[in-house]
Image 1: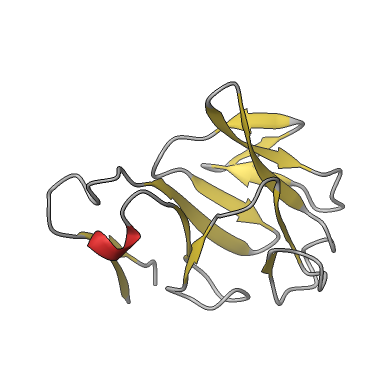
Image 2 (image 1 turned 90 degrees about the vertical axis):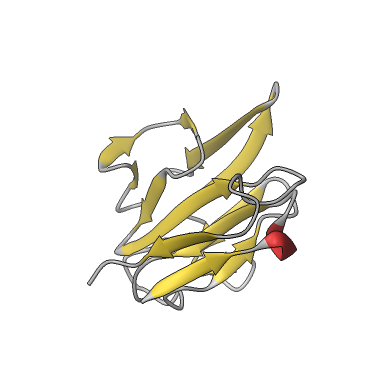
Length: 125
């Protein structure tokens, strides 16, 4: 499976769901802050997995830096395979694991994907 980010995504912060539990290939625009990820109905990105807490992690912007924060979840949050505690800076392409769901973080410029056309993200499996 692949997901394509196009000019429609220009100037946005986007999470791409890379595994089951969140709708594989789904693009989610991160448009409110803090942006809560979890299995609860009040989460901005609601995941369908019992491995995620109701409010598991959040994305925030502090002093111009994008961050993901584990919100004292039972099963932890990882970035690029490394479990985090507290806040961790994010760069485009980072993979955030919430329970068994992987989310790929992208910050797109106002002009859209850097190659001028589209960015293809190949999904695992």
